[in-house]
Image (cartoon, rainbow over all chains, first blue to last red; front, side, top):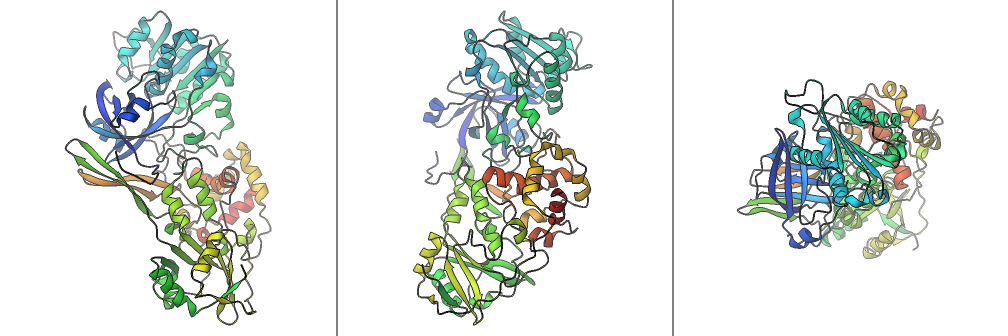
Length: 282
Length: 337
């Protein structure tokens, strides 16, 4: 690593791409390991935290850590080819080097949720942060009640983690409901056809003793919050993650704030009661 | 420490002394017919007849662009080296009392929780020598935001011009006292020189800071048409943010070739549409009035509430530089209602 006396908060750690999974035509997951062996063993984070990933020469981009903290020795990120950095990242191969800064931000308070039923609602590329919590719960399965996952994407090909969806679908201790937007289905599609909030309403998970976690496009989150209220969920039972564009990740660059709330420092995880107190600006 | 006296001619000696001890002397100087803060080598280069330098001196603690790391593609991966700053002693001569108050605001942002040592190491080596205003213009509004030419907050050394072409010198901070002691040969004992009358901008009657902050606290103001109406003429050039002594927004950018390059921290502006634009196309601040509202909230709600510091010091630079004459004090008046 670098010999650096100064505490440089913008200096990333180097990570190696150990494995690549093509989730959809434009979404990839990387399994990453730190080059530094102490960090590799000692790296600790909590589900919901995020990091800044570097494609050197192109810049940094912010996403959640998509793997569960219960899986040690590596971590995963999942990203869509969208901008300059993610396109650069997508051009890398197994064995290539990337940069990582983190973990930053707060997390889903799993330890407070022992004995609760967990309802996960995700749309499109919103599944990765939720997936970290799903696996965290599945790896500590005896601590939680029923687990329900409602996941939808624009089209069948846009569903990420297809192998894991198949695995969750087969598990007796998980209820999985998959959906695609109308027009996104294929002839052999056996899941639902409809938008996530509608499918969630049809699935109607019980609100009692439950926690709901949702992530997806901002417009989906807004409608899901309304649907959950309709199903009897109180705002305190509903959590989401509001990842915004960030450059520093540490409360300095001035980008991610929603009104007076800095997402990178006070978030990205909030319950719906907190979200409703915020300015409608995300 | 008793007050000292500094002759204007002695500035020559001070510049020489600071330079010979490896330091850097920044002062208002005339460049392309504008008074700007720049490094000066002789006293004759200093401009004394000015209201405020066109640029804020924040660029000497928070440079417009700076390298935070360098990288090179090697046969087995990437070579990455973090950049260290080892700043020289930097004297800012001729700052005004309004902008002197801004460094503590910047420091609050750059040190909450995570400490940006690029900033703190520079600021720790910076000596702010404020010269109290004997002149001003219609854009000055320090008295409206609770400051005045008599404010010494943020100054390390506070100077008042005297009638006999010198300065009455007050060391304010510990750093300032150490500075005056270090260069004791330049300063003289104070012998009752008469100071010039200070220029006091008139307080704008319609503005009430407490009312503004109170109104911004209530999320209801967000959807009020007042924002769009007041800021409609903004063209989003971002000039106000670049001259502002408390604006701190930056971008992180990689520059270089495919084989080697550097990661830079560059000034950015919340007034640009790409500032918050997600790669997906979603933009939380997708119209100019939302960006303007964000800037205003940053000054009058986020800075005071989150960092217990001033977001606006009333220097009036944004008012002077705005190409469409969007005067922040007019918005402050409206929000004081």
